[in-house]
Length: 93
Image 1 (cartoon, rainbow, N blue to C red):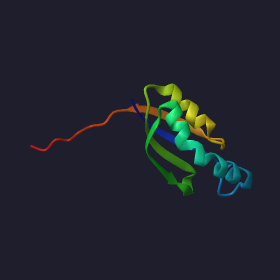
Image 2: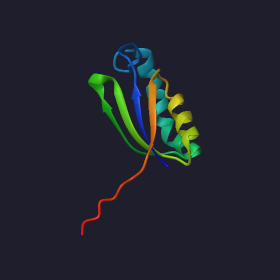
Image 3: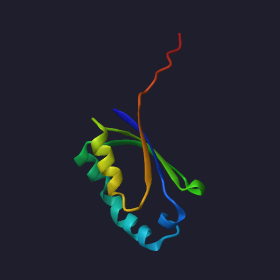
């Protein structure tokens, strides 16, 4: 299944402004690929909207649980909106 994730945080929990969170993220990020493999989560893309303190992700997993597990391991307090989505193809005749 595909899931579209919106992850929002406030300025107090932002790695750009909070040194403790920045250091925690630097330590965590190298392990994310291994953790995705362990959980069976494939990350298709991640983009950041820094002025709005938001990240958008498209991830794939068998169900919601491993996605939630992965998101909750990121060492910064965020609110998540996770929606199941599906890919559409627009065939041209």
